Image (cartoon, rainbow, N blue to C red; front, top):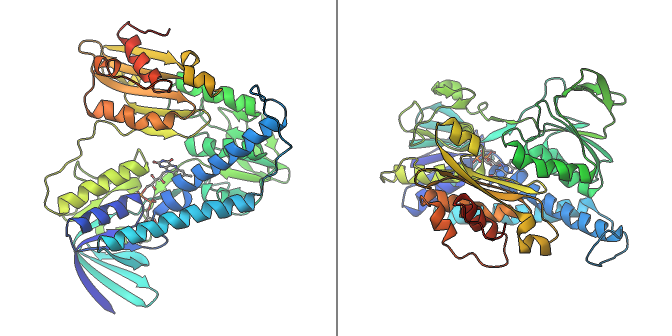
Length: 463
Ligand code: FAD
């Protein structure tokens, strides 16, 4: 049995863990990272990156199909396109390979020792890893749990065969003719829209009264409109039952039973923290609901044991995990840090895309704040017109008294690229006047942001 000792041990090399280890290594902290699968975690291997590769491929295919149907107002026509999903998956796997290889290279460059295998706690300072060359014992002064999350199953529909999670969906080599998506959250809709554009006949079954239940109705409306255009059937207030010979049995909002024909049933009803398999019982750490409880320094209830990323709760997003990882590395290196972020932007890569940073109007009002709301439609934006995508808007929420920006949301084509501008404005404590007084390049969608701020001040120029 081999034994090593280090100052910092990170368990899990997803975006939280690998960023933590790289930063710690850069700061001269003697660091070991253990990963059971591939560096990059859910995000790089079966999450953010593969899904966006799929979405891009689907959009390219759909665009050419649109041209082939003679529907292009700009005068382009082509022959009917064909999609080889096997090739698409190989291309996607190539990107994943480059990125996971890149993460390993960055860890090596930062002099982080990588141990491959499943880590199990022996006690709060000791971990055991079954590696290909035998058992490795690692003793560490500080341990970071970054074990991430995994898809949740519907009890009556266990994963396997027809029933798949996002992981299997992103590895399909043929487009399923009929796809039922259970769960109208961002993962289900991103993939449902992509498969629809690739040619699947898609139905979305959502248990609540609205798809994307975490966003307000105004932001979701353009997505609902687009789903209709794509021919995606959306059943809200509906619940999934079980598989029958004919497909998936569901209960509709009206209480009727209906069988939806399905070649694949994609279950995207949420993700749960990965709590099993690493000896949590040995530690008895405090929980916050299903997640590990942490404080504003990502410390758990046990001294020297930190937790970051999806295992610590919502929002389960890669950039939150990375920010936590970077902070914990600095704390272990002796710096004074705590979680002082004003916002964690969230993006839905649906069609159109949705971005949200900070407070929505309802959230701000819910906190008893008096607000001003400025909203500018892309229908009045020149760039949106020239890219044939005028649906959507930018909305700015600010305090009524001093115009401090509390939240910014947008829905529209490519608005994901505005997310960093929105987050920057909130982190920097911008006021409506700061945004309105910043020259925004013309013609860009970002002008919608400036105009929304102007609207909030009662001075909009282009509406
Ligand atoms: P993970 O990325 O889950 O990594 C945890 C790692 O720990 C894994 O590699 C796992 O193998 C390893 N591990 C677990 N237990 C052990 C053990 N005992 N020993 C050794 N290793 C272990 N987020 C976004 O911000 N933007 C997006 O667009 C986005 N799209 C997504 C699309 C899909 C389809 C999915 C599924 C997720 C998406 N996410 C997105 C969420 C994002 O992937 C996660 O928030 C992020 O990966 C969390 O990072 P993490 O480091 O906490 O954990």
